Length: 328
Length: 201
Image 1: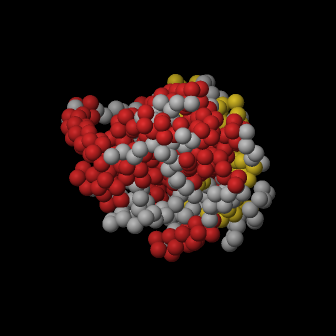
Image 2: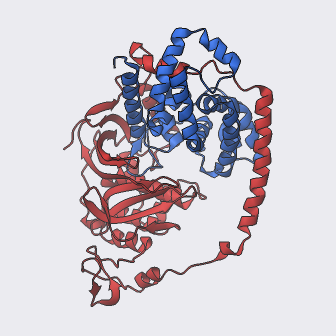
Image 3: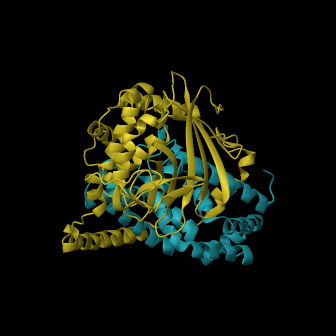
């Protein structure tokens, strides 16, 4: 740290002279952990055996979609003559269409998505306008640039006009070392959906099963919500580089995951209206991606922390550009 | 290592599976193992976690937090990213989340120190030692006042960076927030801190 890191040095030294926990104290904490761990395992076993675990709920909306009962072309809330009793939205979907139906419908419309041409050395420019749940009045703009060909390595990050990365106030930051780690990782493990290259993205399968395998990345037991988050990330970062058939396969793959649900009606992410599809994990956190099922555009995302009512909301867009700092 | 942040949609973060100090075996082997193997993690990391927690909420609450952290970690061990050789950032994240239940306690202690000059987290001996350092004590009071007035999420990031010495990507992974958010929260926390301390940016 340098002189202008005095504040950090001060924080680092705050209560530094408090006594460390003695070995006896830690041993007592360890014993508490082990005792609680044994108790929680028994509770979990009992919960697993309760009858409610095997209840299966049939969703009417799924059946309706399976039968092709999708209302077309009417505005939200109106009953359509094509499918009496089923209300439609401007997206041409039944308003009560479930998440899987929305995703499958979206998969049909990826041909209308205008993806970007890209070549070696290009960057993905990501622009997010967002507010956080604890500060909804404060709208921030975050822009970042990533190397498509190099694991989506972030080379520049600007928030509200202030450069945060490379961080001018943090001399400890060693971006070259991180680049070297990325290179080593790519050389050792090869590219993946999380750390892609252009060639890898171009080679992605064009069928749902293949795309699901790519999301799993060789880990067959990966939980559905983790796969969904991976798919989220692809759509909101490198999604623009996918061919329509790959994009379609991705939406179809996401439609097969258990536990994915949609928010009621349509959702506004900072003036952009779409359908919110998401997942609530075991902690109670819910994450959603807001899409336009007519075009397969990703409009934004929402996040709600466990036990809280407020949402962190952001509208997002991506673009392929030639240089860091370019926005067109 | 740069990677797409897998936890918060739409944002990209640089998450680093960087190696830490050498260990006999990677933590992942113990995270994904049974309860007995999991205790290896406790023996490796409990002291660091306790120290971090005690500096925020005191040693008694730190006892509870550390045992709860490992209990939560064990219950959620399937969520651990096995590419990460060290489980410590992950454990810091769990501990920090659990600590949110004690935000008022933490803030009350900062405010008491700021107001009276006596840190409620210290034993009498430690208070006596610290009272020898009058100048340091004055700065501690101002710092406590600044920490008390920080937004909780900014304080989390600041303390994970400055006290736990995690990197940006490690904090992002620990708190399951994008690295950009880590950077902006840290930047805002430091700006606030400097203003309250009266130091130049």
